[in-house]
Amino acid sequence: MVATINLNEMTPGFSDPVFNSQETFRAILDAMAHPGRIVTAGSAFDPPHPLNLASSALCLTLLDFETPLWTDLDSDQMAIGWLRFHCGCPVVPNPSEATFAMITNNDVMPSLNKFKTGNDESPESSTTLIIQTSGLSSMDGKRLSGPGIENFSILKMGGLTERFWQDRQIQFTMFPLGVDIIFTCENTFAALPRTTKVEG
Amino acid sequence: MSFSRNSFTTEERQKWMSVLSKSLCQELEGAWQGISEKPDYQHLRKPETGIIMVRARAGGSGLRFNFGEMTVTRCTVKTDEGYVGCAYVMGRDHRHAELAALFDALLQNSGYNLKILNMVIVKLKESREKRKEEISKKSAATKVDFFTMVRGE
Image 1 (tube, helix red, strand yellow):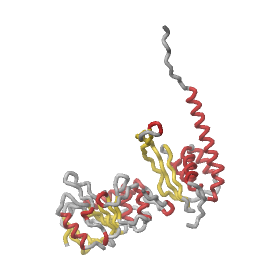
Image 2: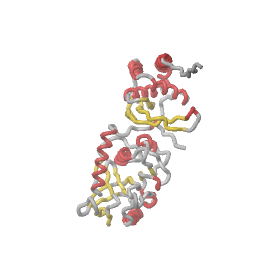
Image 3: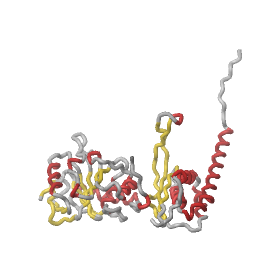
Image 4: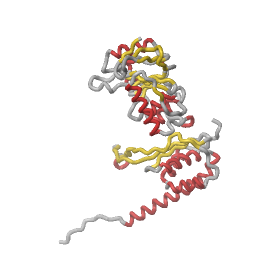
């Protein structure tokens, strides 16, 4: 049984759906091509609590009826209804069925291998994780290197557990399988594709 | 919420939504202009056009099959009093979807409901039935009966 969406507390999404999603998509390409680079989600609207602006803009841009979403939000939270209303995406109970995952609480997030990591024939059929962090900065953080990075880049993501980085290290050895990750904070985001090596 | 929700059943709302989406846009526009106290509103979902697959059952009770695709425009508005109106209309007329959604929102407001229900919906329904009748008449005039002539011996 699919829960009904409560429209009485619904808020609007992009003010200009076509241009705002194109703008955000361009920013995602930029972030993915340059892992660790902090980019800004351009559009302004009121994101549904507890999602931040960047997470909501990414969802509005990337999700539709063909992309099952797994999220750690409570099923009675307004944000789930907001995502279903504006994106039309199905919300699945199992991380291994999801094309996208929206994670708001890093302390209790499932291990990375619980998500789809693709298979040898189509490694791209994996989950893309959108993880909300308490801060993004390019000062004293992890040292990133790999495709798209000239020498190395520095990215600090607030609020991630040691277990998460251990999982990421294990996933890195599984290449070309693995998940791609986008970290968000307020209206900014940065990407950590599976090709990027993380040290420190 | 503080606003007073008009008491209506799902069936009643389905009926007026159906009338609104099957009316002509000009009729809705005229009715909208006739409303003296128009509420302010915002779009929760701006009018957007897409395609839906219409499914049918053979003979009305058989297996479901894909009947064909149809262009549909939908819109969701929220009035400043907090009423949310939705509309799905055939075709690509964005203004039609917007007006239908606005009327859906107004009809949920007890302050407007009876006035609008009597003035607008009943009228729209009548005019819709009239149009339907005219079309039936036109097509009835072109009715052809098929029969086989018996060859004389």
